[in-house]
Image (cartoon, rainbow, N blue to C red):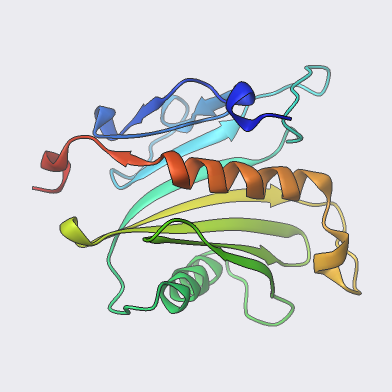
Length: 182
């Protein structure tokens, strides 16, 4: 699988001020419901009978969020701070949460894969220090039943595909128009 072949062309977020790649078959959620100005949300609109060669399923969602930069120079700690905040908003706690994978992405990014009982989060942080902003990309991967033992060793293939998509989106993320932050 060549990731570039499965992606939609460069896609404009925030009125075109930011660009990255979004997979084919994902729909802009703002066409369906109200989305905060700091977020771009895409839901998987694929049908089970449709064939895509990217390994994703039919229930993932993607959230791109422009957040105030966390007061932490270490990107790993900053990423964990953002993940903890997401989990709080989701109503979950730290029990049963496993950071299955963490990786640097370029000079200003860090990605992780977080496993919970019925959800896997692929979360990436890209720091735009010049505009005091942390860009958080989250891909939610619902799972039917996570194994109780060695969750990270037994990740579903859709989680691995989502993690690879996250890394691709982070590498391709570009700030096109800084006036977004004025």
